[in-house]
Image (cartoon, rainbow, N blue to C red; front, side, top):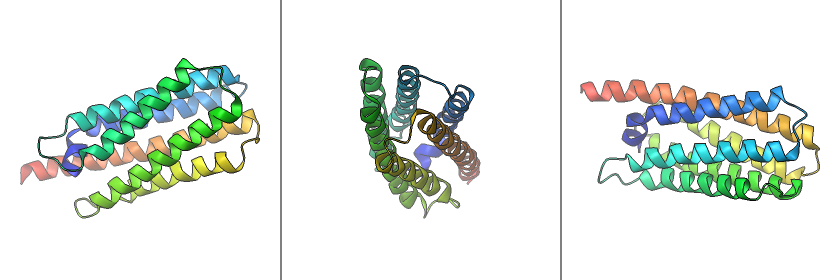
Length: 183
C-alpha cells in the first residue's frame, strides 16, 4: 500500500489540493443555493474518486492492498455521479449522501493508515484525515436541520482540513518513496 501511495503521491496531492480549493469556494460563496452546493460537491466527489481510482489502478502487479484505494475511489465516483445526475435532491437527502460518503471514506482511510503504520512514520496524518471525515459525517447525521449556511461552512472546514492533511501526507510519501528508491 505504501509503495502504491508513494509512487502516486501526486494523485494524493491533487486530491488534497482540490479539497482545499473546494473548501475555499464554499467559504467564498456563503449564500450558495442548494443547487450550486449539489454541483460543487458532486464535482469534488467525482474528481476525488477518479484520482483515487487512478492511484489504485497504477498499483504494481501483485500489490495486496490496492483494493482499499479502489473502493474509496469507486464510492467517490458513484456519490459524485449520483449527485450530479439528480441535482434536485432535497437538502436532507443531500446531507445524508454527503454524510455517508464522508463516513465510508473516513473508515477506508483509517484502514489504509493502519496498514501503513509498519512502513512509514507519521501515518497518523491519514488516521486524522479519516477521523475528520467520520466526525464530519456524524455531525451531518446528528444535525441535519442546521441550516444551509452552517452546512456550507462545515463542508468548507472539512474540505480544507482534509485537503491540507492529504497534501501533507503526499509530501511525506514522496520523501519516503525517494528515500526507499535509493536503497
